[in-house]
Image 1 (cartoon, rainbow, N blue to C red):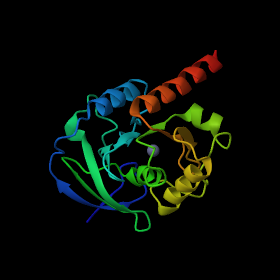
Image 2: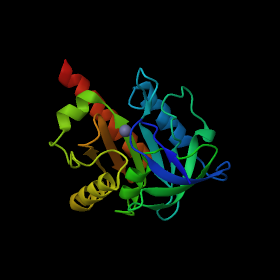
Image 3: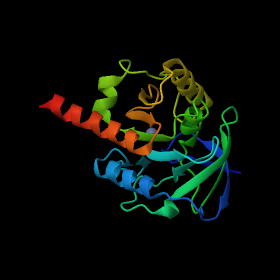
Image 4: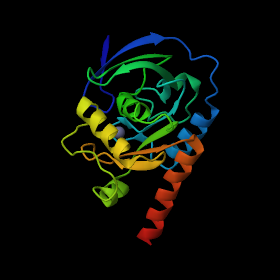
Length: 205
Ligand SMILES: [Zn+2]
């Protein structure tokens, strides 16, 4: 069991089997991760701490997600993804397989996948202006629910169940700049994210 804190402050626990993920096509994950990286929606802060991640459902509630601390990697490849094969929101714990351990924000993704079987892809981006603009306008998690906690996971789950939609946006009230975009398809999640950004740019002009 290992602790991790890739955004710097909250710890979660994981068991990790260091092995490549086999027989899964993750080309679309790599494609969209690079697009979001180019838009600086996934990346790293000047202090080197990475932010943002991307995932797709695998089987049942298992999912493949970008690895811990991979936000600052320029060109991601299959070795920067992990399969989360088990999790426990109450215990803030997960089990993963991959060359690197899963993102420390994986439990936010787990909360969404376990809320609706129709949701197949999730993006977690950081964007200051979008966060400020949509905070409490779009569905927003409690601002007392901090990143990487069971409270955040349950706060997300409650919103997803209330919204009862297969595609949407959640603002993470207790996680500055953090937004989650979910959809029944990775391309749809990616397009939804890019449309958010382009509407923001139009808005600015
Ligand atoms: Zn984040």
